[in-house]
Image (cartoon, rainbow over all chains, first blue to last red; front, side):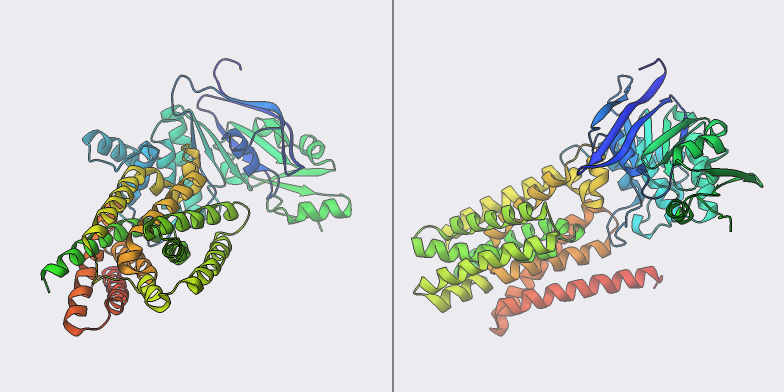
Length: 272
Length: 264
């Protein structure tokens, strides 16, 4: 693994119950980099994140994380899950569980622990609702609390699975800006999956674009191009830039391929 | 109602209430009420079997609730937990029908196992009840943080190295221990109501996990004390009051939360 790299995925392939999900995925992340993992539903984003977390072993290739000698190397925000509205737990309790939720015993009051939790809540602008029940918070507020839970041990790498799904547009912008700021402040590399790249365009240092289990990676300008995506999909794709947004369109594809692309949320528009 | 023969009743019932309330906190936040209902019912054939073989009923209870835990966790690996729980339950209940058909003290025994013998606790019964209760509470205290994290989201736990499957198996084992300890005193049907009623009231009354767990234990104790007192005064069965008061505390908790949300 090269110097300065926090994550190196090398020629990694993953099969789940005999079905090939990911093929020869190859990319790396440097310290403090903000990377979007973009792809349609079913393109293998969650599988890739779970492989990096070590929940799934690659069938070939390797995934290496440079912990930099720190115990906490990876923080994780899973895909949106339903928080029980009646769960007796405040935002600050969930953040504290990020600090020492794996330890045995009941948490004893400690000024040091309290200060760390307060600081972390402050960093994600969650002080205002720190004492509210997590189940009663809005989607954007819950994401902030989950990000604080994942970051409180200052991991070198933060993985987020579709953190922008089901958020309103203002919350999306807020969460992206927050993650961009935190990645610089803590020098944490961020790998965030999304089916729409547009909210991330200004924040991303790098993009990993997944389609049909294969990936293209590099800067947004290098990857989100007609030639690169056409090769990735295996049929002609047009990349259209309008009003600062990127739209990926399947122009003259075979019927079944066109149908597949047309149903992808990534591909906002379709040529009639 | 504080006569000599009642002293053991008060002690045993208090121990059972504390344990059921504390274990019940996790039953409620994990959405495991069905497992908490099924384990005592699966365990009670064990007491019948022990009667038949002539060993301590507690041993039979422990073995059968252990079988219930093994059945639920093994079957749930490849399917839905509610189905796994239901299948384990019916298999063990089937055995219970067999054992009970072979015992001579049929009706009396079944009644005591289902509804408890809260007014007939002997000195010899107290030791095992206290021991099993202490072990259950100790396990909950030790597992508190990882179990809480895994209950909020198994995946968040896994990311912190807390195995969801291990937590589920350990949690069910604690429920089984609490069941074996409480069943001879309050009966198979009433253990469950003490595990669910007080805890669901407590979670409505406070936002803090640890406070909610302790409050659940406290509400459970008050419920049981009131039930015994009412039963003594009215001469109606204690089970009626345990079940009724559990439901009542739950209702009161929900109303309190409802009023709180509307700033009343």
